Picture 1 (cartoon, rainbow, N blue to C red):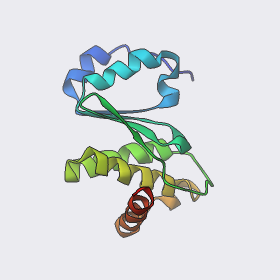
Picture 2 (picture 1 turned 45 degrees about the vertical axis):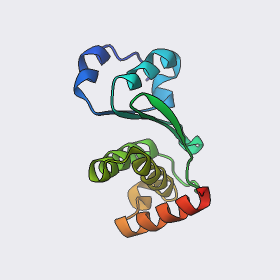
Picture 3 (picture 1 turned 30 degrees about the horizontal axis):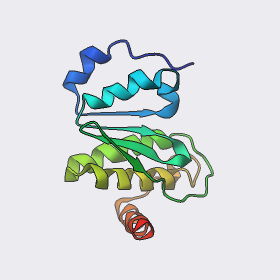
Picture 4 (picture 1 turned 120 degrees about the vertical axis):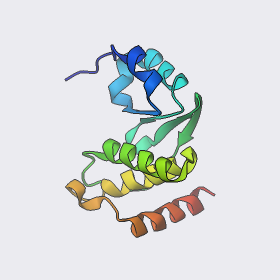
Length: 135
């Protein structure tokens, strides 16, 4: 399956709070896709081991990936998106949510399948270490 333009973006975007896509999803039409993030409060473009781009009210910020020894990358972008939305819903802070998502996604690639997805305490420790590393 190849990436396709989002035909219904104009209909959907006025009704959403966040959009998360992978760079592979939007690569052929990146310029048009990046305009979506001007129309939502928060969004992200995942870029695998290169981290993510976070958009907050249309402003662009880099999110560094957490260090990981990759075993199985399957689903890491979905884990990032899920963790981002849960953390943002809990705390209301997009930057903290992005750090949580980066750490959760990195942990998820360190084991096969869903086995690497951390529990809450493990994730909190990983986020604390990530923040210390980044300063």
